Length: 372
Image (cartoon, rainbow, N blue to C red):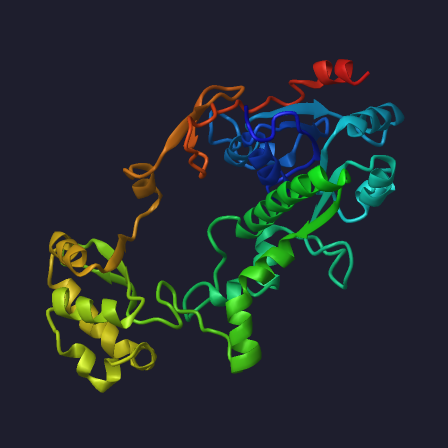
């Protein structure tokens, strides 16, 4: 029996943030009914690389039931009301105020159904000067300052995956689980509001504190770190790019002695502490690059392991695809099986089976009959 068996989640969702949240709930055993327009969640059309299916949709919607519905139509609005009377959780990420205008505002729903947990997902929140702004992942990365600390000194950059959506979905998932636990004590649901902006603002706490209390935000340093040195990517003699991360003085001394073979280097005043190394980053990076460039990667890796140095290869997606640590599951979709990364949580018992991805409206008839 899964932890969320018996929990009914109704989700008026599209794109990434809300579907990520409800996908995690489905993995936990909840029944998730995904409400879609006649044309479907627009993420279905983001791309067609997976047997004609969207990579985004396949990733985020396994284990759900799909119901095509138009809540502006009285009959469908009445159907949704009947579903919510039996639901435990209602998730929606329409434009701010849209659900309320359709008669499904979270406060009104909880007044009608006191045990219901509602989760409103938005770009900037329901109130404030930016509440009405359109909010997609890239825009939030820019508006919340994330792009300003990502990239190189030459230009800012977008993080290569949808981190604002992902952060928001994870926050929504965690808060819903918290509300479900609370309901076991109080018997009452809760209203939850989660935004993309708030999630990234929280993740930006360290740069923000540097600015607010230190007077200067960290600069963009590419694959380096604004507050730690040596830290970054260095090429070996055979062209393999290796990345290292030195976290403390013990690691630094071992790295100098066993990797660089320069045990006296930490005694140089320029490199005697992390602060000094950051001030003289160009000099220490030159020393590391000189040693790495003269040695094959296999020799460097052997030295890393002996010294206890934290290291990795600078892999591309092809490298991830072949990585020995990558776990996969096979998921059925309407157009054929797909291998996906396994769910990130490992349980001490058997992993739950991978549930299929629904076709558009695949469960409409059965759900309409059930909630007639």
